Image: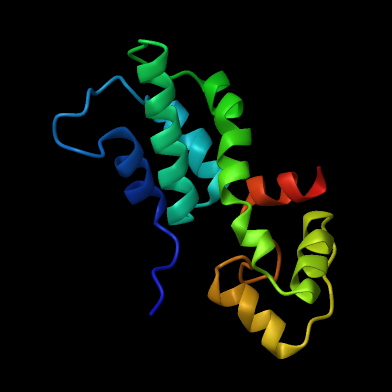
Length: 138
């Protein structure tokens, strides 16, 4: 069974209004859009960004998130999400590094399926999660 990526409107709604009484101004649409662009609707990373951003707001006793805070929590997101890379077979890890550099590696069908099942490749066989590619490059 697979969940797949969230559609843009669903992802934005999840970030801006995760529960009925969530404050309307806590995560502005511009911030939600920036997060969506970083994860392309990948559910786990989307939820992780939202959770860490709300936690940050609470820690800072702040009512509204700002764009610069998306970048600020990104390292936390990536450190918690590193399992995506660490659980990949070695061949897939090498392929992910190539994909992060904009290359298109030759893959055996089983490794291609591994990437596709996890929605790491888009329909053009490019890396599907921009923030993951940037993390791999660094």
